[in-house]
Length: 251
Image 1 (cartoon, rainbow, N blue to C red):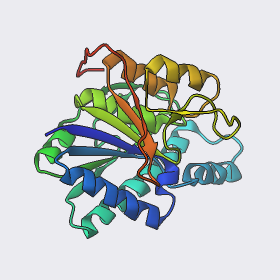
Image 2 (image 1 turned 90 degrees about the vertical axis):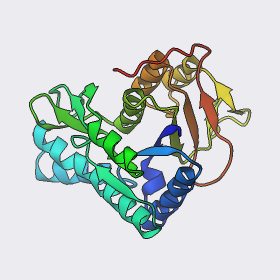
Image 3 (image 1 turned 45 degrees about the vertical axis):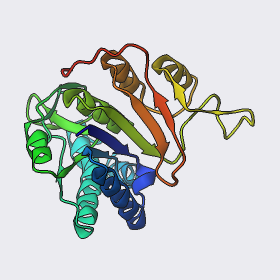
């Protein structure tokens, strides 16, 4: 049985109907015979809304309290998705970053993952459950809640893929793959069915918001195949990998 890590972005979880559709997709993937870990972002613009609240209170919110506030967005998504899975008969459990064993350094609002102690995740996978993890967050070596910076849920997904030796890490977004150019501004843009990490990193450095660059670098280092597709249709997405097949299970 293959282990797949899936990550759903904020637009894929923006409404309750969207969350129900994600639950249906996750359940179908599980029924295909896969173990599943699902990393979630905050719903829609929830993170921006929380930031706005913070800055209405104070022009300079304390970084520790900002992490406490912003990490709530992903916790809402993870629990609602678990509830949606329960209603369709799919056993699941949701974990915060700290409950997932994601240990970071002490840098509030832009922490780096140091290690993942995934015992609880592995235990629940062994019980046949879908494990849902709040992206973008962890717990520091000082036992404080930390966040990884904007787009950090991508890093969470790849880091978990490394720690769990996943077969593939899948990203479901509001785009149906990786294009040679920005399809919103260039009529010649073509979707690529396959490309390597360096090509996508180049596109990201040129401004494409495909994946977090740290997630791409980590995936390249540990040879984790990535797959980018839309959560709103069934179109074939883009596979990102390279010819080297060396993998490690440690960050």
